[in-house]
Image (tube, rainbow, N blue to C red; front, side, top):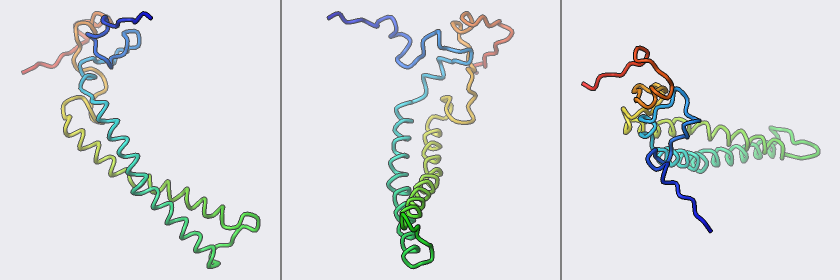
Length: 154
């Protein structure tokens, strides 16, 4: 069995796209600062916490309340399926409302992470294009010296 060595791509870093996939808006300097592992961790935490802390309880409570209303006679049950359609709809709506109610908590987690990365090219206020045009990018995309502006490092 022969193994293929990838020593030629090690100097570019593990998460840079191949040169053929890079657009004019690609900035290798700013992309290195984004901590994708931390972002994935926050997303997983938000999904799990929103399910266990909001979506599941909202769903169960809305299903129980709906079943109680059908049992008491405030809601009419379906002659063929009974209370199942109303209870299922209440569960789905409760689940959706529970997930939606947790959005603010997840946003605050991302904002606290953004505060840690202030200045690293992360967040909604960050310009998506590269502010620093490296020499390699100038040559590759044929940018003229007049069109590219580099901020001074003073």
